[in-house]
Image 1 (cartoon, rainbow, N blue to C red):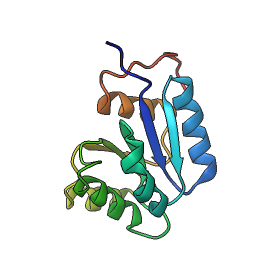
Image 2 (image 1 turned 90 degrees about the vertical axis):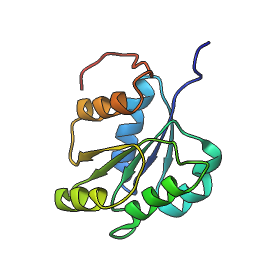
Image 3 (image 1 turned 30 degrees about the vertical axis):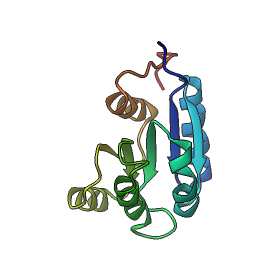
Length: 136
């Protein structure tokens, strides 16, 4: 039995970043959903049931991404979804993710190259095939 297209949700308020990551993931065969704020993500992610969420730690204000990550872990419908948590603030990324129960996650420091992102996706979704094998 084959898995339907793997679904990845991106939650980030940076439009250019979201479009770039969406394009690369779509090239790799993923179905991509994007959310610009935590309110939309909270409202729509439980029903969307993505296989992975790529989440900016700092959305509308400091801590909003971490609050969303915590909520995703506490919400029964989204608890098992792995996260790739991203931030340009290394200290915030390390300290906040270390002190919070978030389930299965990995972190990426922005800016990252797209190969690093794809490596993180492979770690979180080891059985999801990446189609192009391209290097970015």
